[in-house]
Length: 93
Image 1 (cartoon, helix red, strand yellow):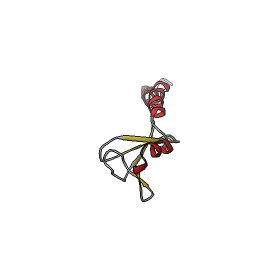
Image 2 (tube, rainbow, N blue to C red; image 1 turned 120 degrees about the vertical axis):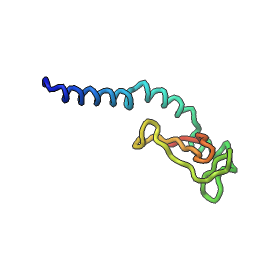
Image 3 (tube, rainbow, N blue to C red; image 1 turned 90 degrees about the horizontal axis):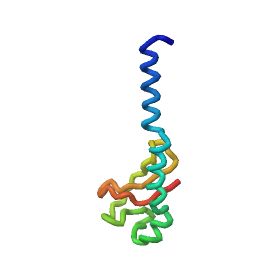
């Protein structure tokens, strides 16, 4: 237990955990995520965004949307972003 390398590794792990999985960070993202419309609300607000069974960005009409995890890539909460104009469009869970 007196090995300084072991203590340094444990300290680095806890710092990594604090930065990436801290509840405060998740809470801030969660509030912004909940403010986004759901997929159904987005399509109701922008009926012209559904083109050939694909959802398009209502700003630039780009069809290839990217699903991004809220906190990390494996998160079950996603927000869909247009890669062309970088507009966050809607959320899914």
